[in-house]
Length: 459
Image (cartoon, rainbow, N blue to C red):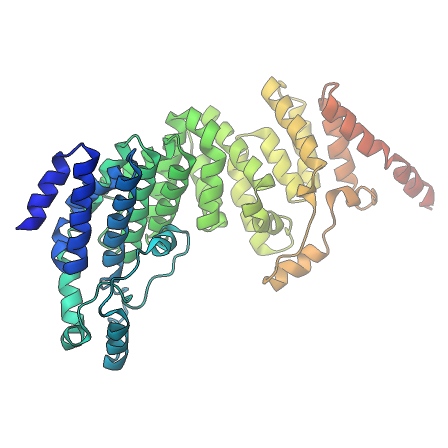
C-alpha cells in the first residue's frame, strides 16, 4: 500500500527535496481518498508539524497544506453528540446534492482561514459538513450517517493526543503552537474522548505554562480553559489547586507569567468563579509566604485588570447580598497580606473596616515590601481604577453603582465619609518621604479647606 511506504520515506527523510515530495504525495492522497488516510493521522501529525518550522519555504508551504487538509477533514467528521441530546439528523438530500454539485470536478482551496477560526477563542462548533473533498452527491446521500460514524470511530484520539503532546518538546514555536491548535480543535470536537483532568496529558499542559513563547502559553491557557468549561466543579477546583502548586514550586513563573495566566483565565472563564476558588484554596494554604505573594498578585489584578472590571463593580456594592458574600469570601484569604486586605476594603468602600486595619498596621513591623505595596496603592488611588460605573445587564447592581461616587469625589463630603479621611491620613503617616507621599499629601491638601468649611457649617 502506498500510504505506509510514503510515510516511511517521510519519517526517515532529512533532505528538503525528499520531505517536499513526500508531503506532496500525502496531499494528493487526501485529495483522492481522505477517509483511507484517517488511520494514519496520529503518525502524520508527528511528522508534519515539525516541518511547519522547516527552513525551506517550499517545505513549510507544503506542510501547511497537508496540516490544513488534515484539520479540515477531522472537522468535517461527525461530532460527539452532547449528553442528553438526540443525535443530529442528516441534511436533506437536495441540500447534499446541491453542495455536491458545487464542489464536484474541482479541488477545494486550502482552508487557511478555516484553521485560524478553529484555533481562535470562538467556541462555536460547525453544524454541517463543509463542501470539501467530498465524494459525488449520490454516494453521500445513500448512507450519510453510517459513513461519517465509521470515519469518526476510525480516528485514534488517544494516539493523536500522544503525538501532539510530544510536540511540546519541539524547539520551534510554530510547531508547539500548531500542536496546541490541534488539541483545541480535537477537544472542541470530542471533549469526552480528548483530554481530561485525570489523564496524563494534563500535567504536560500545566508544565507548558512555563514555555518561553507567550503565544504558546496563550494557546495553552485557551485549551485549559476549554477543558475546565467541560468539566465538573471538582475538576475545576483540582485545576486551581494544581495551578497554585505550580506557582508555589516555580516562583519565576509566578513573577514573570502570573499576571498573564490569571488574566487569560479570567478572560476565558468566569472571573468570580476563579477568584472564589483560589481564595478558598489560599485560605487553607500552609505556606504563609507563598500565600501572601499570591494574594498580592491576585489583588493587583483585581484592582487593575480590564478583564475584572465587572468584579470590581460588584465588590463596591456591599448593600447587596451578592456583594457582601463575595467580599467576605475574598477577605478571609486576603488576610494573608495586610496591604492587600486594606486595598480590598478601599475598593469595596468599607472604609471603617479599612481604618480598623490601619490600627493593626501600627502594631506590625513595617517591612520594605509593605512600604512598596503601600506606595503602589497610593499611585493606584491617583488612577482611574477607583472610578465607578454601572454594570450593563445587571439592573440591581446598576442601580447600586449609580449611587456610588468616585473615591476622590467622596473626599468632598468629609461628614459622610469620615473614615475615608482617616484611612488616607493614616497612609500618609505610614509612608516615608517619597513621590507617593507627596502625591497623597497634595491630594489631601487640596480638600483640606472642605473639612473646615463643613466644620463651620455645623450648628
